[in-house]
Length: 286
Image (cartoon, rainbow, N blue to C red; front, side, top):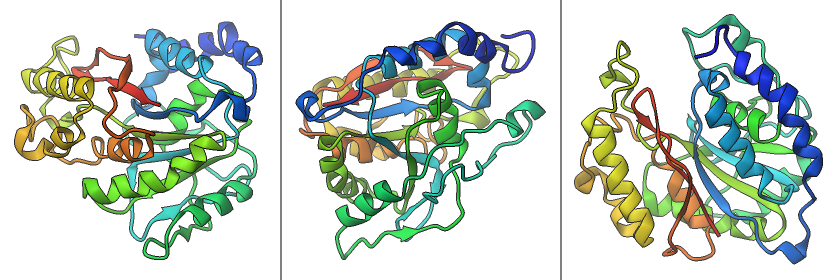
């Protein structure tokens, strides 16, 4: 762990983040950007140098998008909503018990009104989109994005989770698929396992059986492109309900799958391993 909160992030900004200048802008010749599901971590992600390096390298491997639409586990709200598109909308500090530094971090992105109009136009009359006038990005969005896009120079919007139903979430994702073809990056942000009440914080290196078993099950289903199996997680996945006592950190992957070009394709795992015993498995779909 870092000697002070966020020391690894400071080093990242000094030694790595400047490489964003190497990125080229997305063009139609690139084809659709992939749809991502990432395990986002809490503010202490900023203490994990190896994890940040892998997350940054992932963004570095992609063309620079026109904007980012992210679905975070931390905003469950119906009807379907998007966050405020205003430039520099204040962040949501939806956590507790961490160092004061994390409550003063900023991620002041540019105006996203044009992007909000495009997202609204993608939704059907049966799924009208409510535009929130003041809500900013929560930590499921701004924490990973500060690493992936540290310059905060892309329009970013957050989309709420209006339902736990995999079919409905995939239908929302399908509506977002054309945005990928236009150079927007669609991200589902959760955590592949999230059984916080069942962790032994005195032994952070220990991976609980329920976490390892769920992660293996998910990896095998992702490796087959078996979305039906992934949707049966409540009854089929080993490690339940300990791996997900609430399902908010798992279900963003259904928006990711819905936005994919082929909903039966094999997922490409980009980040794996564990943090405090929780699976960091993160993947992309073309």
